[in-house]
Length: 140
Image (cartoon, rainbow, N blue to C red; front, side, top):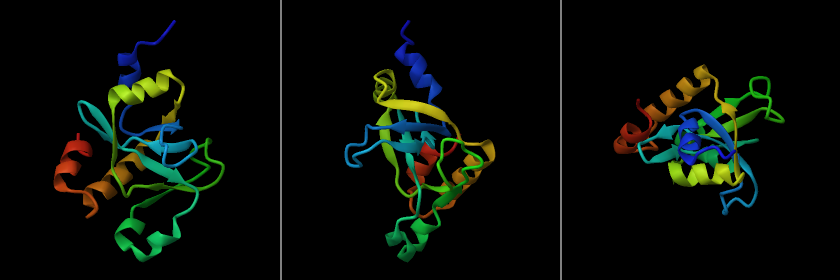
């Protein structure tokens, strides 16, 4: 039995962790976390990286947006990693739902509530995002 697309779309919420191969510019499957939700799209798509990219060490505003994730807290991680919350990518709910139904994207789990709240606090205070984007995606 197929799960209806609308049901798949509704399972994707703020804090949902996914693994996907839909990012052509990356060339491999990547873990990411949905941090922003609007009526028609999902935003944030903050990627999980094993290390902080060296270029960010000279960019204090971006370096401050590297949130540590511990392997002990998230069993899917092979080792301690970082959530890179420096750039907002968007995808329609429908497109992401389709990629899940095609098994290009799989739902891994959710950020722990404390971590979700801490990342949202970081994002809301950051200079990297406009007030419009913050209001649209990162507030209830």
